[in-house]
Length: 209
Image (cartoon, rainbow, N blue to C red):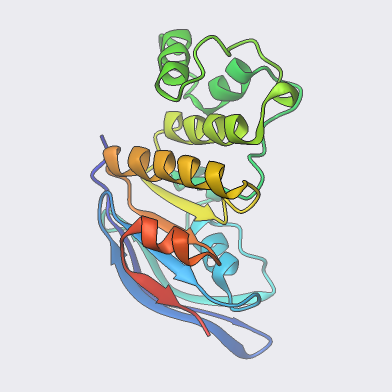
């Protein structure tokens, strides 16, 4: 279980001379910070900056820290940040097990066992050899969540991950995602337009203009 802490110290993003985001905050293990605001306010750009793939057209300053370590100079793949987007982004040419195996370190032993147990935990036991194209939207979301957790991230960023689900499924998947992230002790930042998502996250809410 992770006990990471994510800190944004004097983080400022601007585009064409216009400041979009100015933020100082810390997110402790198991907490979820929700970021809300209209389209174009910089929500997704903030996540891109933290994750390490912000468009170079933006000017960014400030420090992003995980457990006190400045990760700003690290390439995206070394930052140990898990991401969930609107689209689950499963690899169509790989089986479910193949998608999940992709997240595990090369030196990891007992991969098949970890995958099998993980699928049981999310209610998809026996799905190892299924084609991603045969999954429902909710099943895709669960697999994407499991893939994220198997990658052992130190922090998690959620960019509207429930927006394509119908209302009942949205509540179900949202609860499962939040519970898993809290149980794993992961500091999380959620970007959403939905107040119900923010309420369910039950953490601090940051509004961008």
